[in-house]
Image (tube, rainbow, N blue to C red; front, side, top):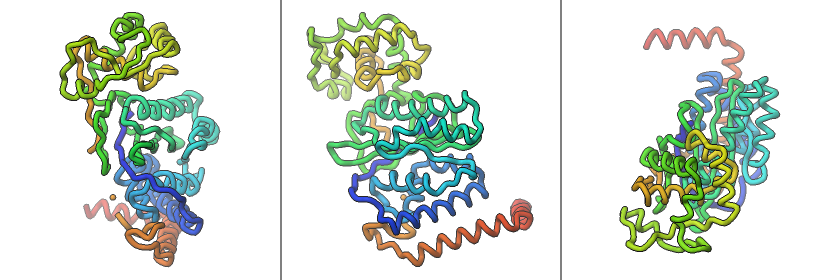
Length: 368
């Protein structure tokens, strides 16, 4: 599946006041229903997966243009705003709500009359998109928000966010089912951020494809063979290997890899060997195959075969109603309510006179 972008946002405390959030829900309802009527459900899913469009939407709804709450509050408003009869739903959310994603997919999947196989595919997409951004994109951002959008046809999008506890920034990740290739072999197509991190291991980049294959071969051969590449009986690894990787040079001494594999870690590697995964995606999907094990395999691949993984951060906005903190200007309630009513009237007109609307669309097409 294709990840469509990453956005970095400063972490802001507090929450949207009730008077603003209620208006956000109403305006989000109007925008969503209008888009579905005009362009269809698939197009709405595509736009949600676009980081720039999502950022603009959050600004139109009136939340802070650059706050971490742009993600959580906008997704929360959309979850409250989108009615089930529209054929689109939003599952998951922030913190403990993200843990309900799979059960919500099952429940709403039944309402949408999706097959058991399709529901399982949606659950897989939810789980693996989160695992990839936590473990294959090693940028020190830990996920704490996961919203999973899907339609009654089975199209889906993911909007999830991670927190870097060191610099107090949040990073938003976007996924889309629009282009089906692989969860682990698609580079980002659009990234917007104010902060670029150093020494980010991106195991999903095209540059990391050889590293993926060698990592898979190392597991399928036998993980016991990897022990000779780990230094000391305790396997405590405390070197600045990142500098070696950045300059593509290795120290003359035996390298110490930045990982501390304990007995449980080796059991996971042995389990992976027993499963004999067919490809890197299946390897990543194995329970317990976390960031440090994938990193160790990548670095050993570099050491033995010279395969160079990507160490480049995969990094590549609009005001309408103001923000809750008064920036760039205070929210104008009268203007906001007028926007809601304008959209509502437009939707009502479409619903009441679809024949006239269709005629206008045909005339527009003819004139073009």
